[in-house]
Image 1 (tube, rainbow, N blue to C red):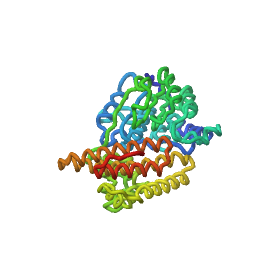
Image 2: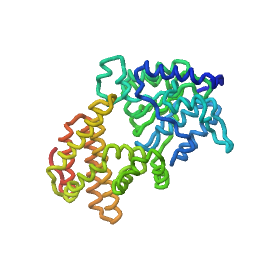
Image 3: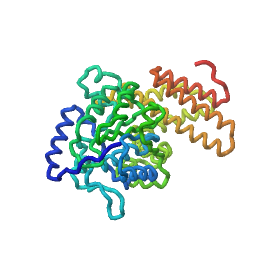
Image 4: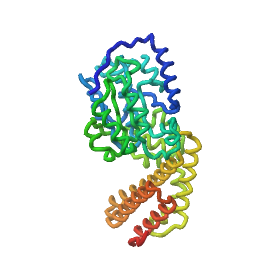
Length: 403
């Protein structure tokens, strides 16, 4: 359990601490990786049960030191984790006039958090390997979170005293995409979870909780985050962060809404990646396949779009590796296909067409197989060609023979 540290932080030290925080970040080489600015806990949309769990924990005498926030990608797990951390770290956190816990928005802690320079809130992601002093680590494929990143950015800092004591926690570490923790990395953080340094809180964010070791899961409080309902999504669409989506043509907004299925983050990423335009280009060829006929150009076009997107990402972000960008682009393409076929499955089930529903369900399994092949470094064009061929055969009512 994380113990509350002593309340001895003075506002007059804010400027001095701010300079120290920025210097520490820059000297570590990870200045480009900062947590997002916190959203007030009361402004989180669609996660009433999860928020209630976290607020109850904040009001408890002793706070659990390890948490797993699980749920689909893009539903707001990181937003909730940063909001939770902002209340944990701030000595000003207390009940407002309605009895809800909140922090003084003008406190030194909140000022640093908004700037992304609070020294005691750390976001642990695989891209931190790019800033390592170890050339081998810097040059490796960024498809997992290696143990050296965990040692440098969690285990060692956790053993140090917090810079701004007085809150319910003195240090908070957020591990994003925790399912990507390598086996050695998961084993390495076990001791921190078993015997946490005083005031340390660790939050693991994951869309695949089953990929975490049972020993990790058993040491964490688990909070589930689901997709947002239509009302919550409509409210989110009115927020400033949804501005780029509101600026799109209506047909693209409609497609993105269907694709995201209640995940604002997925909607933003799909818009940035241009997935609605992808769908427009691929739709005629997909219809051919869904009619049980082969299209010789579909797999090639899918591969070309994914490769072009991966190159854009790798060139735009010095932290990104080409391998990780390729994997993300392939995953985006397969999500697009799966989203379309899930809608087809729902339509077939609604009209009572069991044969069609079974065929579409099988094609969704083919998408899962294709994703596994892509993750195993099978040639992506070959994986797409196999998917398209198998899907066309299954939609035609034929069993696919061979690979």
